[in-house]
Image (cartoon, rainbow, N blue to C red):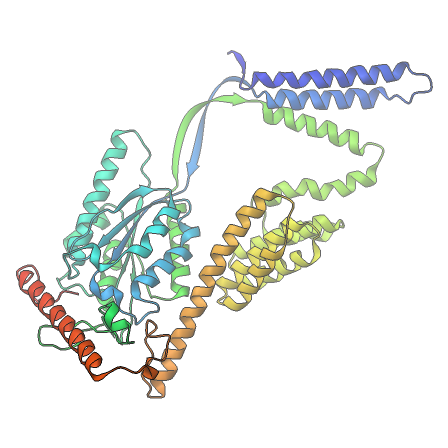
Length: 526
């Protein structure tokens, strides 16, 4: 066995230690100088052990097993024409974008791929750890990205399974670890072809669960055909079938639930609570899919050296001054709390602590522990208390930030927004911490604002429907065009233009229907 040092250049740190020893010995020679051999020896030994630990001495080899949590998540997003329906605000595809932002924390440790589909699908973004890139692309998804309309869930997911198996095979050929896969399907379930159960039996056999999110409502909605000329006058034309009737698309949850049941996944509704439940299910899937790897590594001795150095520093600090040593105990407990201490352990430490700074940190950790147990009321209480009692701006900012997250989970978006704003207004001295935390706060505030706006629009639409009024199109005119004066000739030109565009739309849809008649027996192209 050969002794080696991972960072031998750090032995230069012994130079100031040697200089310190020379200064202490020189002080001893001075008349009437207070000199303690014990203090000198203990301090020098502690500093020397720290330098040796930083140099990382290694001796021999041993086998180390390591668990790594994570999974490969494939986002299968329906981009057929029915997904632009606005029965969910701002639209079904818009809801998908908001949902992925809510799921960002759950997907943070996973590799994610993007698979848009309609009658068939394609892998637009292969597996990547760059979740921010996925979140940038999803708002651009639209039916115009594919010419093959009419949803076929079986064909599309069969194509996705082929991609997954190919990626797994390539990873194994390169000797890479392949994490178990999960699929999230966002769709309204309007599959115009019958489900082929043998496709989903293969998912089950490969251990790939499919979690389906039913994106839409059972009451349904017409499918808007957006056009600048029509929207200029506050009118939105809607998709019509071959007979000239307006098409109404509705959520069909049965095939989605069947797919989830056949593959061992779960079905979720299109609401915030269900999306949060989906995030928890993804986290559980990541923990279940922990992969154990064994590698031969050098035997490290720096933990022993650091422990001895800390003991010497503690002796030097506390010997003869026991009141300081007693006050030091809560700080020694903090590392244990940071690595997953239970609520009872943190509570016991909090009862013993007297220092305000320590009590603030322990109260914050107690809020984190309650949040992990999904006890939202308790978590919010301790986060608020920690923010109130601490004088540390960084801890206060973290407490208010987590208080906002807790209130989001508790479905109190207005209070969450206020907490986020308070955290944003709290300034810390660390520029890097300030920049990163403010970025996260801005993202969360924007997301909560969109959720509140969506809920308000939905509530307004429901109230207008109950009162017998026609809801105003959110993309309608912001100006009162009724006050504008048009000549009869100009009105006629406008109406003729609108009629021509509607006729062209009907003809184009009829041509598409005829071209896809063989591929889609029912002739539905949305």
